[in-house]
Length: 391
Ligand SMILES: *Cc1c(COP(=O)(O)O)cnc(C)c1O
Image 1 (cartoon, rainbow, N blue to C red):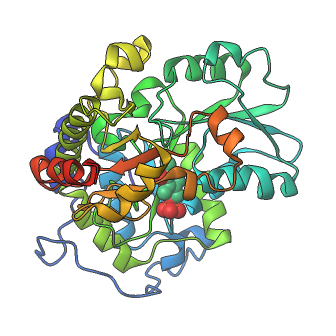
Image 2 (spheres, rainbow, N blue to C red; image 1 turned 180 degrees about the vertical axis):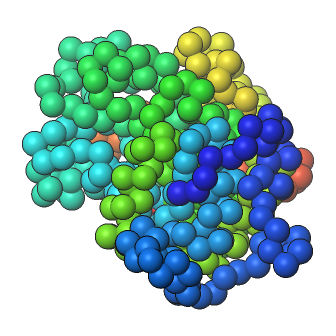
């Protein structure tokens, strides 16, 4: 939590805010120094309330406050909170916003960690978790149960990069008196600012695009100030804070966020275009190939790009061979870093499902997911071209 950014800062563009936003002058240092301290001297001895204590678990050191201020500017939200991981951000948020006896309605095809949280952990706190059976938001009204306090969706669902009608999600949440919460990890604030669509809260795995260097695990909560403040209190109790050194790394990563994400958008579009024309590739999933077809009209203007993740389908045998033949792209989970990463969902994120269950949600054994990095697109395309050549 930090003080709201000033009005002039709000008028600057994202490229500028990523570098200068919420900067504080500390001994003239151009880069924010790391405050590697657990605790701080108490200056005002008359006020010893818990809130007045400065202690690194409370996310109120200079590294936290500057970083949270910058993230508020980038996301265009009232307040933000940095967390130890994306899952720390998601779990602290949901535990805070929903009480025992109340319910959460989730989009289907969720990130695996969130899916497990909904299946195994939240029910133990008496929180009912329902998962949509369809991506058509118009069908949700009829199945949402009374007592639903949160509708939870993802900006782009993995691995088929599905974009649902996010504007309809917000409208439905308003109608039933629920909060609209979105995991915007796959979009990053460069491609989508969910607050402009009216989302009450967004969560990010900052491990991905926001940090962007495959070297930090971190999470972010951003949204309405009153909600973020309540989630901060929960995080203070659960203890899932981000340490000052990780704050420094994340702040450093943010400075190049616009540059990196634009390169990743361009690389993914170039690779998707190449794959779509390749004779052994049967399907390519990337909304940027044809936004008029794959992005609901109500949210098309809200997206400024479609990110670095795409997936494509080949025979299961070729998919298995492909991962061993790639020379530049790395066989590893995650996304948003400088390196292009490749996985087979059937053997990683969706391993827990049967072949039939996977097929029912469109994840055949020949699906390959690519998370584009920031390399030269031509080099990555050449790598896939040689790996797809039979022989
Ligand atoms: C990686 C990821 C998470 C979890 O983030 P961690 O930082 O690994 O805890 C949540 N949601 C999405 C969409 C992700 O890609």
